[in-house]
Length: 315
Image (cartoon, rainbow, N blue to C red; front, side):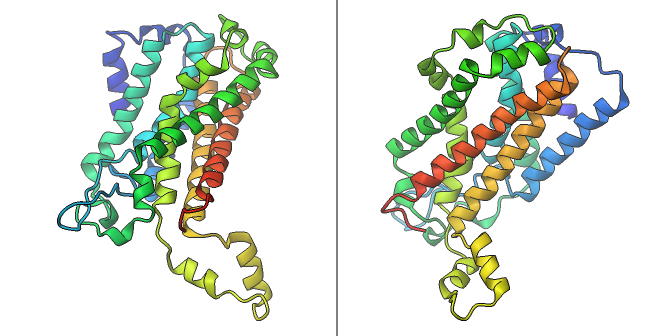
């Protein structure tokens, strides 16, 4: 939190000063405590979710020694981009904050979250250079550049479609009712789907890196062995319920967990920051805006689940 405040203070000298024009004064103690508490939760999610400075799935490439090369991953950075972007997108689209300010704000948020993990935490064995080939599934697919491009575009398209449909439907009236002090609604009325998809390419790549890559690279574990041995004819009621509720492969479980975390973090980060910091925003307004992005995250996860179930992709 201190690093983020320091970076924003420094950056205000070079282009984030227009953020101050839409910010409200935080005079209630619960507002400050709420932001601090959520920042702690956000860091805890990254820490206990093992989102350190490296991706939870190493990028493996063939080499002469038969070992593995790993790529500096962006788990925590990608999660930060996806959860912090909706708030800044709101300010850029409807409050006249410059796009350069939005991107500078995202960079500050990413750095202030990523640096502590990169400096203070060691990577787990699967993240290290000496990780064996057997620790990563679907290596050829993960290393395929066209697949990276297509899945990033898919995620960007899902975000673009959700936002475009909201702009053409319920959102403009909702904003007028619950967001006092809006400066411009032309961003909703004039939005074009192709430009929205292009605008969400960074989010698409972040979603691909945070959701698709770790899920597709997950190797079967003990849970999968129990699933293979499950026999409905001899299973108890408890075992049958467990199988029906959580009887998924490691890949599916990884994707479900990460999608749930992304949806939760998107809703909390967007809702809290919008309601507490933007002048004239009602609680219902902040909740509605946040819910749109949480729904987008769930739909992106669903799209990746569909892609991951394609023929030729191993569990």
